Length: 355
Image (cartoon, rainbow, N blue to C red; front, side, top):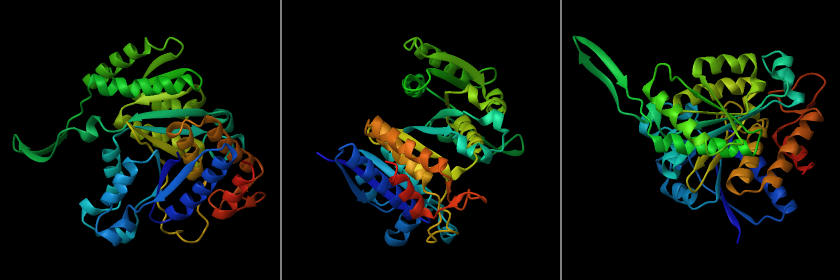
């Protein structure tokens, strides 16, 4: 029976980059004898224009029934004046909730051919290969909050951070299981010298680590981790942390790689997981055929690995991307004199030729 992939192009360049990634998935499926089917649905501003909502019920139901979801991007200035509850970005928030996406995986791997694009010195960034595992549905973003109240004659606002042991255990286990497939090293990031939630987080991660004697664990305060990512990113394998710290550190780590157009991500759910590039919808270049599809293609590789458990197919896609970069192919966001310039379709075709 064919496994179902739901494709949600979204807005802006979403159509172009997901088309490229689906072509790569089809080629990988052909090579490795995988039975995959594809079903497309709307979300974001495109869905709002058609249905008056950024996340139609049909899209959510299809995603919940899928084996994996490939997502493009949502948003654009066209919808700036839409009511906050109906903005395109609400689609991804609704999918996170509806699919129970509890963890975000953000890999940062600096290929030798891309070292020069990093703002860090080549000797610092060469060989960097890390994965940030971020808890996605807990912490201060989802705690109780007050937008405004009067206290002692002054206006104040507040947000409540809380984590439970089961929430920390679940994300820690995912990090350790992932590290077993990599270099067997986990760095847990917190602020246990100040925050009670971080002290519970650290105790829980240390307890989980006892079940993984083959994986090394070390703990870092978040401020030290932020510094170490800039000073020596090659020291990291898997970084696991909470929602707020993970949000900040994953964006910092993305800069290490030099181009957000190259960066994939996975949001892991209890049943269905969602895979998307980390960049936005880039409405200014939508329809021009020049968007960089590599982040979405590598997100498709993550879908093969984490949603379908097809490691060989995932590696084949990743090797194909590396080969294309080694040959000097670059989309306009990365192109320099001396390289081979490619549009979206040409970049996808180059990847396909190596699978």
